Amino acid sequence: MSVFNEFKYIFQMQFLRNAGFLIFMVLIQILISIGIVIGFTYLIPTPDTQSILYLATGAPTIILIFTGLVILPQQVGTSKSDGFLEFMRTWPVKRSAILGADTTIWLLITIPGIVMASIVAHLMFSPGYDVSWTVVPALLMIALTSIGVGYGFSYLLSPTTSLALSQVIVFGALMFSPVNFPMERLPEWLQALHEVLPIYSMAEVMRESLAASTFDATIGNYINLLIWCVLGYGGAIYILNRK
Image 1: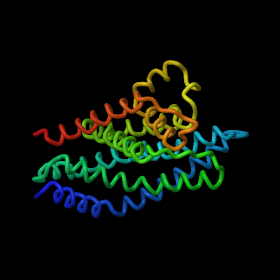
Image 2 (image 1 turned 30 degrees about the vertical axis):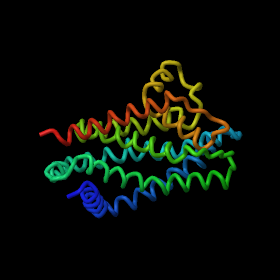
Image 3 (image 1 turned 135 degrees about the horizontal axis):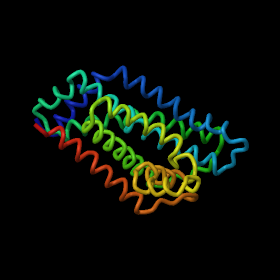
């Protein structure tokens, strides 16, 4: 089969296999994204425009992190446990086609949550969006990095370990990562750690694409995401090819 036919075949198989779960996840992500935009404002006695803008631009980032670094590793862990991952490794197709088809599915289920969060934030709070032309490339880069890293550690680690790590990540992303608030609020050692980890760079790139007149992302943020993306997908392909 050609690469396109391989991609099409795998996409159809994976979509039909997980259709019910994927629909459920779309609904969950819509609720989470709206909850971040609205619910987190209750934690701030008198939220100003900047605080609202952080929440409005942070919600799409959280959705992508939640998808790639939390839900995806759990699915991979389930595939390992029930033997489906070993079954996939017997397919006479390119490993890149398997990852490409799966990545496309995960990208598609994030779109409704991101769109709904942005619309609700705009209608309820008018946070001051200034959407840049980089919004689509930024979304793709953040999503690919998140999904790639999720594939990397979930294929490398055992199902139990990857599940535990995914729970730590979602807790850290919501509470101790500068996604919904400025970096300066964190202690210096945690700021230094976030300069290396990809979550802060994801948030910066997203903020700049949705509010270009208020936030700026550096070239270092894009390089950071590129490095993590390559490491994640490279590790996943290596493990899939390993005998």
